[in-house]
Length: 133
Figure 1 (tube, rainbow, N blue to C red):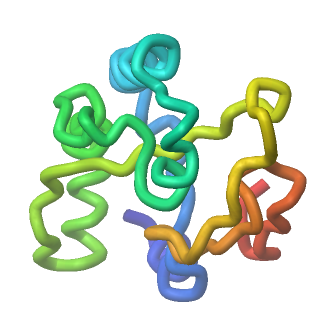
Figure 2 (figure 1 turned 45 degrees about the horizontal axis):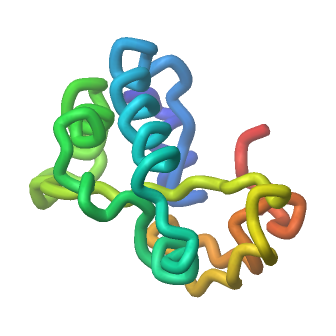
């Protein structure tokens, strides 16, 4: 962990570590969610998904948990937080293309990442000036 990363975390509550999750980590997670969207996504539950998590039945799937445990992210969390609680479930947020929805995705309340956006689909959410490009 660099001094710059610690400073950014203290100032912004986050920082970006590019390249941490590589294709061997992201492909299984992406494939799981892509398959879920194609076969199990229920458009009648869009509001519920948007407010909580998409693919809730896969929240404890190893492919998703590995994005935290197998990439080095867990070590970064330990460095920053000393003794973080174990991560036992995940949250999935996806952006469904507007042309695949009967109406705009519903407004979101504050989110686990602290960002409240009018919808999940840009350009309706204005990023903070401190967000990385």
